[in-house]
Length: 187
Image (cartoon, rainbow, N blue to C red; front, side, top):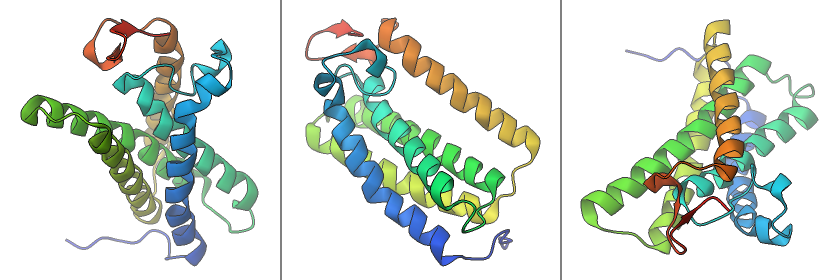
């Protein structure tokens, strides 16, 4: 089975996805400390980690990836004639894939191998960002999403955004939301 390329390879698109990797890594890494920098302001809670739970750390990749895709489209979308539907699709693919990989990797390492360390957490973040950007690049080039898929992806994006806000303030008492250093939930 051969893949049909929907969009011709474009140097700008390729550079955008590659350049997104260090941006998301740096911005996401810095966002880890942002809640303290903002004086633990409640308005920041939906966007940056408020504790050391796995759930809160997903915000680091999710919102950093959102910001990257938004800024590239805002400043370069028209100039480089980026497809709105494919760019949106690629961004959502990246934003959702990375957290999925992080959660899967974290609980596989912890549950199956009893491995839990700052190093493995960092590597999962690193691998998740790179994988998300590469997958997004392929999604942009090879997928022409229909309205139904775009609609479902947008709803899923919105649900995650709402969940990040809601569960920062009212987290369920599940391991995903547990702040292991304090044994508490939320902030």
